[in-house]
Length: 156
Image (cartoon, rainbow, N blue to C red; front, side, top):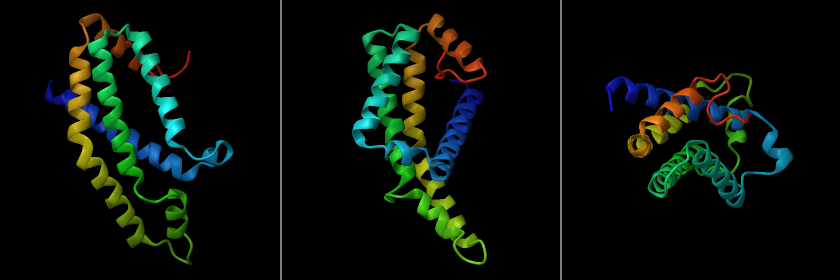
C-alpha cells in the first residue's frame, strides 16, 4: 500500500473515531434508545457487515477479512470509550466548576489519543488486508462509494 494511502486512511480513521467519540459524549440520542448494549452492537455490526458484503458482492474469504476488520474496529471503539460507563459525565465534570478544567480536559484527550494510537496498527493492517483482498472492480466500487457526499455506509 502506498504511503499516502496509509496516511489518508489513518487520518480519516483517527478523525472519525474522535468525531464519533465527541458525538457520543455530547448527544442525548443514546438516552432515548438506551445505551449501546453488546447485543445492540452485535446486531448493528451484523447489519453493517451484511450490507458491505452485499454491496461489494464479497466472497467468503473476503467476508472473513471484513469480520476481522470489524473485530479490530470494535476493539478500537471499546478502548476509546474506556472503562467509564458514562463518558458524558467526564465531559460535564470538566465544565462543572467556575473555570474550564484544562488539565483534566487535556488528560482526557491524551487518554483517548493513546487508546487510538495503541490499536491503530492492528486496525490499519486489518483494513489493508481487507482492501487488498478485493478485486479491481470491488476496489473501484469502494472508491466510488467513498466519493459520495454521505459516505459509503450511508443509506440510499
